Image 1 (cartoon, one colour):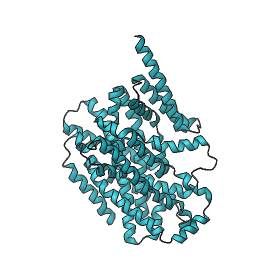
Image 2 (cartoon, one colour):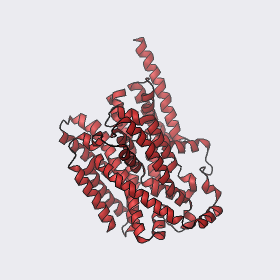
Image 3 (cartoon, helix red, strand yellow):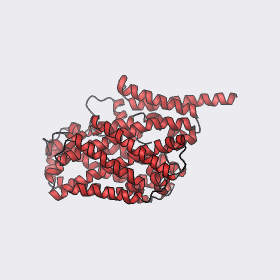
Image 4 (cartoon, rainbow, N blue to C red):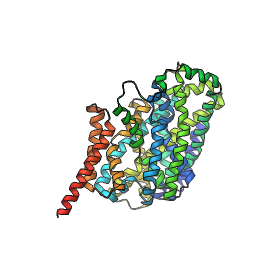
Length: 453
């Protein structure tokens, strides 16, 4: 009953906000009116998704700290770098999406090419959130996981379709508070017998406390760190919050605040996963470990609060992802191609793309191999070239359309080769370095040929 009421409140908020949406700018950027607390909490809630709770605790439960370097460590560094390198520059540009910057810097061909690369990554990430949502529903009800994922997808699509980013941010404020409360409660109750914790750590296999996996090479280790640190640096889901901030300084400072909150709360699921084999050796499916632990040690009322926290974490992420996909596809492709002029037609286009993206993510969620693996795949999928053309575009004057296009192609090809064809030890880093080298080389050739004309 609590779950139904909670989800119903989300829909009501979406309905309320929907009455205030009159333009594409309202739907995607909330009129650029977001204050520092709103941006910081929304950025935290957006980043704090299924992988932070369900995925990371499961990975650490199975493999120790080496199973989850991404959460919260890698993504915390990513948020910090986002504030240092991108936030203020992007906000000053008054873009609607990251692809707007590519059009301004490299031309419309690169704008569209980048969308083709960015959207699959976001779809995979959305699928991870849907799968985690389904796991929670399945663990707390009698429903099978497949049915739970289906119902979850239907609800999220309705909720996201209505509210746009303003509805997303308002609910993020509620959801972020519930996330913090639920995790803190579980952490405190677990630690109530501190002497018992000391005994658990004293008896723990030292390998569980190491970030280095058995048989892992230096290059493999670096690659697994860089995927979350750099692979998500150009994620439209987070950048949308920065673009909706009231000013460049708000965008930058909100990144730093979100970074601190994220690391503090993200460490709790990692800690609980670390002690998992000792406190709950019969957890069964690792992806349901955190839920089973809470169900066993928390009183019923507190367990309801914790379940709400997990749902909040997922809702705060998945609607952001679907909106990011919609912004890229609708604003940068559908609107210019079909020459949609009216505000009404642009908002309708944005909402239709949300539905299509949600259905695609649903299919991926049904057939994906685990929440954490989906998220890591999303972080690395083709983003190497996008990362290179963004940073080199901002911080150098070198490179035009040919350089950017070559970098995107090489980044995508090397990523696919390194992950699925040739067993590169560091597929993501190889793709980043290859993209950067091709960008610089092609930019030099562009300069030489333009100088000789």
